[in-house]
Length: 596
Image (cartoon, rainbow, N blue to C red; front, top):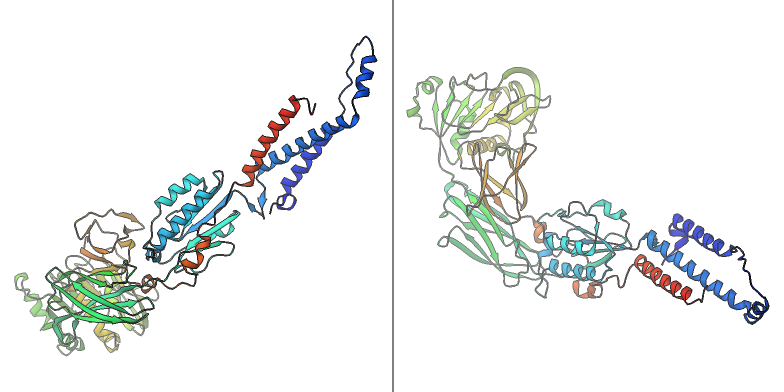
């Protein structure tokens, strides 16, 4: 409802002032015209035959037209609000979250249905209406009001995104608009904000998807390998699902499993025959209506037998015992003299472990040092500290410390390392001193600035895991980074990224990191100064597969508001058109001498 006098004080003040001005102008008496005539007999007869009421009627008609022209002209210029909001502005939020890719019963995706509805809404708007289009994936980085044709162009550029953190800018809540709409399935953004007209495109859709793909050797038998594929049923009906694990056309494994409503199952494949390299997992269902989570990609890395040389002054060491018990490690004990006597051509080890023994020259194979003093070959400062109880914190992002808590590690004495771009920090004292580092490169090294007998490390339950992770980081193949589609963050020393089919992927750099963008799942290889980095892009998050987690009404019951358009024109446009019509009418009446 239009409220002239309360919605805008400035508009009301101007309107009253202009009406008063027009009335005052009409009350002004024009100056008396002096005319010379030969006789007043004719004029008396004319005056007598012209009734005064006719002149008064002409005056009131002219005043009424002038007031209407003033009111409508002011309304068209200042665009008064409707219920406190701009009458010629419309706000539209379009949900382009991943769940909108699910198919409806018509065969169209939820996003296609929503997009078609937005297009119908835009087509029903007046051409003078300003439209702000907002998407939940922030593909429109700076939403603003634009014309209807421009809104059509912006709409055509939008696509379904990959982010599970669907977001509507908070500023939208304060946008001044008389009409506000949101087109969504309600899966990732929840219910509609207050004051919005909801257009629900949600419809239940059967879906099965992969939420996990991993590989591991069989405990006690390093020659065997298992693949774990986790499948979830996100629908309310049981599904007969075919799971396929493939490395080539001739090397693939398939299984059929029944998955109950909203059930999650894990199937284990014997992948011993699979070679090192890329692997693809896929699920197939005849009723599946969401294909984006049906495939996952991974790499199998070679877990070869590792020959370890153990260099220490004593052979009675818990560290030596643990190395001997590791499934794929064969260890040979050496004294410092025996190690120094080895020539490079005689170095038959895959890795070396130094227990409290310094190395005068840099090892030519990957190595772990416990109790580092001050090696001349290491371009990092090393200084001693002493503390009766030195607690440490760990770098949780490094693969060496994966699945390790280290919460109870205490050091009696230690050497600390200076910060360097050549090394990654592993363990850091609470006061900031670095007590363990990992040095990447063609020959990797792990250096701990404390002896095992000067700490409680060997008594921690995490120590065997730390030792296993360290050996794997030193000698295993290229590391694997598993990420979701979208913006992928890589180390800053990445020089090139290639898709598995050889396509060069564009990179950009910011804040010391490298980034590339992909909305497709697949396998990529990044090349760094430390060697290749395998990147597996798969959408394995359970929230991605839960496309039916919505409380909105279904698409069938909301068809009546699929096209809730603003019929006709905005008030400002109509006021301008009426002003023009009244001006033409006033011009006609004046020149026909009706209002003269």
